[in-house]
Amino acid sequence: MGWWLSRFLLFVGLLLFSGLFWWLPEALVRPALALTHAQPARPDYYIGRLRLTAMNRHGHPRFILTATRLVHFPRGKRTLLIEPHLIQFGKHTTTTTTAKHGFVSRHGHTLIMRGKVRVFRGPTAQVGTTSVRAHTLTVHLAS
Image (cartoon, rainbow, N blue to C red; front, side, top):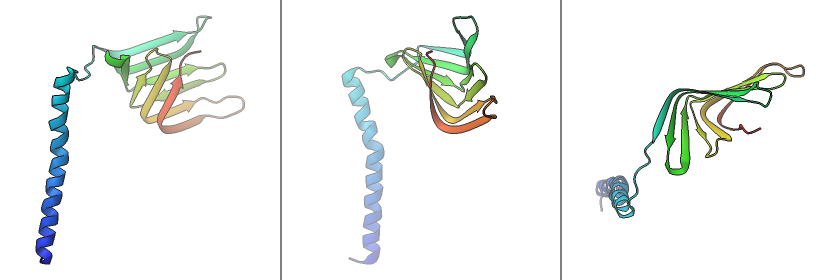
C-alpha cells in the first residue's frame, strides 16, 4: 500500500471511531430510560435569594448562609446552591466562605462548596487575617 493510502485509511478509521463514540451513548441511553421508566432529574422547587440564619442556644447567630438560588431535586434529596456565601461566627473571629456553587447534604449538616472557593478569616489574638483559596471545601454545619 502506498503511504497516502495508509494515511487516508487511518483517517477514515479514526473518523468512524469518533462518530461511533458520539452516536453510541445516544443510541443506548434513550432505550434504557424507556425500559426502566426512569425520568431525568428535574427540580421540584427553587428558592431565589436564599438567606438562612442558624442560632445557637443563647440566641446568637452561629452562621448565615445566603445564595443567589437554591434548587432542590426530589430524587436523592439533593440541594444545589448557586453562589453560596457562608458567614460563620466564632468566639473571637468571623469566617466567610464563598464559592461558585455548593451542595447541601441530605440532612443539612454538611455543605460542599465547589468552584473558586475562597475562605477569609478575620484576625485573632494569635494569628492575623487568613485567606485560603481552593477548588472544593467541605463545611460541617452541625454543632
